[in-house]
Length: 241
Image (cartoon, rainbow, N blue to C red; front, side, top):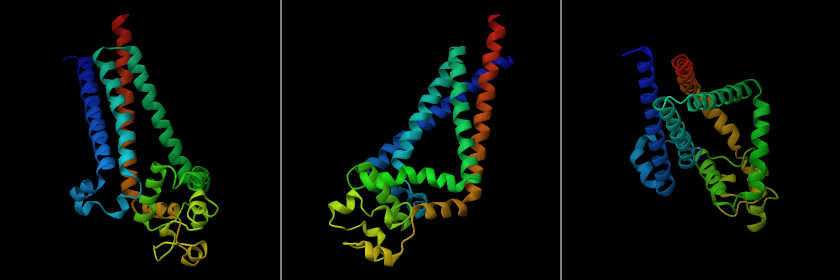
């Protein structure tokens, strides 16, 4: 077996694993979204609060779709020995890699800037969409109930919001320590419940080694995938010349 054939086979197997992993995540995401309670029962002791601060179902569905498409692209490019598909695969991985590096740099070096970007997204959602849009409401309710937090910064994110107006001046129950309705702005101020951003930031700091290890592993795999795809692309040039 020649070097080109071996690398091509590895490329196909690697992307087949990506495709199967994407299908698994997609199926799991749909399961969690449709019937999250039974999924958490299966997880048992692993379903602790630190793993539930985001809506796992929608996250898995989004990542699963990306992985399925990426796996198909890589498999087809290697199987058909298509320079176009291999180059496209390389470009997609490169874009993802650059985006991850840029996000990491911003998060580490410009944490206040990153917080400002997130707040610019979160505040309008809490002011205008919370209580009206089921997806937005479900994500924030899960986050606030599991982390015992209120809003992005604190209860003031809900003051003057559509939710407050439609509930006679009441805020979400998690904004008050009593966790009951009605939760007035005065009671929320007295409770002084921390915002979710600080809670999530603390969780990331507590699990920095795990997060860093996963990020490094993903980065190495992406570099390996780009190297293999570019090797096949260049060798196809030599084979066709």
